[in-house]
Amino acid sequence: MKILNIKLVFFCLFSLLCCVEEIDLLLHEDEYSKLVIDGMITNDTTSHKVYLSKTRPYLSEKPAKKVTEANVTIKDNKGNIFKLAEKDSGIYKTNNDVYGVIGKTYTLTIDYDNETYYAESTMKPIPLIDSLVYEYDDSRKQYNIILYGKDPESKNGKYMWNVYVNGKLITKTIDMINFTNDASLKEGYLINRRPYNYNIQKYDTVTIETHSITEDAIIFFEGILSEPTFTGNPFETPPANVQGNISNDAIGLFFTSGITRDTLIIK
Image (cartoon, rainbow, N blue to C red; front, top):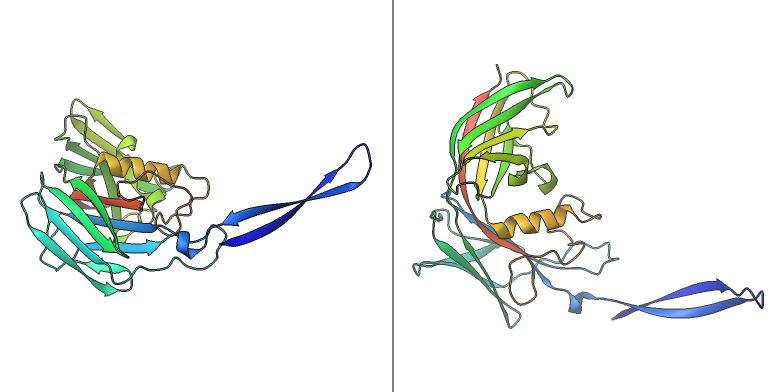
């Protein structure tokens, strides 16, 4: 454990002399770091990923250490088990033919360094999207996208939206993603306006990716966004112990997401 010596100088009013007091602050080294987990499974047929790393000392400028040689599996409540292989350092992937099913509960299990970590999430129904329309925002000099749809959770659904413009993901960081609390739910109807500076212009092709997510995910993302030191990447170095859903005192989130997509062209 590293010790930082800080000399605090106090001006003594009566003696007019300087008193020096030495205070020892204990800063965590690598052996006191925690496991950080970033994982998701969706209803897309694709290779689903789980990222594993370790927290780093608060004042360290080194990148987060990737966690290798862990045993990672995802199991559904019907007994199906998906084994994740470590394809890159700290990145564990399922086979390409894996997909989640709405209504099923999925459990992530990680065995690492003689410890076992769990997280559980149930995949929520996908909203039925009626249409996407656009309107020109003269103050921003760009087009905003408005989504209309039906909330299958009857005003209790939790959603987030990603935006692709001309095939390029625009919402690369969590602070660019739109969440349910920015949507209007009226009698089970979903209306979501996108006022962000996505710089959508005439003739652009825009794809809106709607995710049905869990309450755990909403709490986690909003907790990160409320951190004053947040930089855009929620899993690089957590500024605080944001509430996640991982057991055994690990940090991070594993969640399920049903996905639907709609595309329009600005004319």
